[in-house]
Length: 79
Length: 137
Image 1 (cartoon, rainbow over the protein chains, first blue to last red):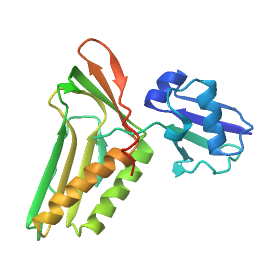
Image 2 (cartoon, each protein chain N blue to C red):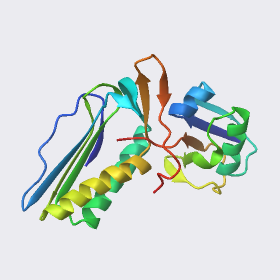
Image 3 (cartoon, one colour):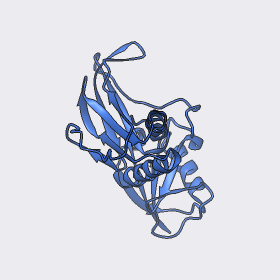
Image 4 (cartoon, one colour):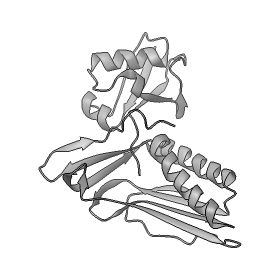
């Protein structure tokens, strides 16, 4: 299936891209994050990366569907 | 009301009818971070989700503290020293709820709303701030 991934802040810098689409065989959001963290050598462990799928916060066990847009959210630091 | 602003924050008039207490908090760009001189800050947001989560937390604050009204404006983009990064205004019938509601909003904002801060240091280095793991909801 094809997934669209968006990166912000620290993770965008480490990936070197704002977004990308690719073929994935990750079953869940958590699997995808773990895969990306390892592939791109993120400085953050997957446990510290939150996600949103199609505009809503998601849990790691959410099952991915073809065409999903997954946003990787590093620890927030507003204020 | 919650909004992101890419221009300097201009305070708006909040509904204060019936208010006995009105509290304003302004978060400012400080000239140092843990002793290291800072020249400017840069804020980035996942705009769609920051706005929806921000509106949600303002509504929660209104209900939790029986506020008359509450408003948050957060800057994004590059900010110079002394600029206001976030403005929170809260009106309530009594002062206690106004103080408590205002503090709750900034505490929640810092852990829930997808906004990130990059510190640009005087020595030319720049770093995305990653809060320690204890700062969870």
